[in-house]
Image (cartoon, rainbow, N blue to C red; front, top):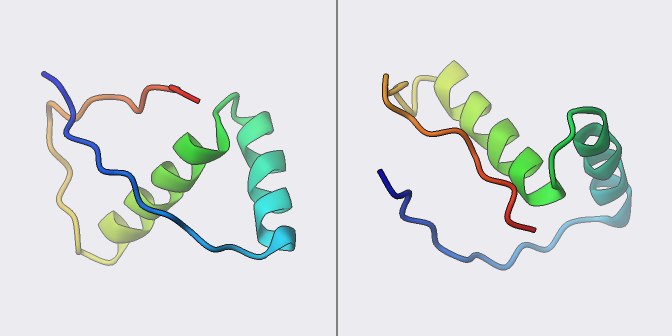
Length: 62
């Protein structure tokens, strides 16, 4: 099943970007995949996104 993705420009502080890069490196992900992972987890935690049983793993296309 293909994932429908949309590009979105993001303005982010240098300090936050550097922290995300370190975290992504630790988890062997791209920064883009790490940001999407963190956003998805925050949405689930706050009841804004339901977990789908067939949800695909984020590809690292960067």
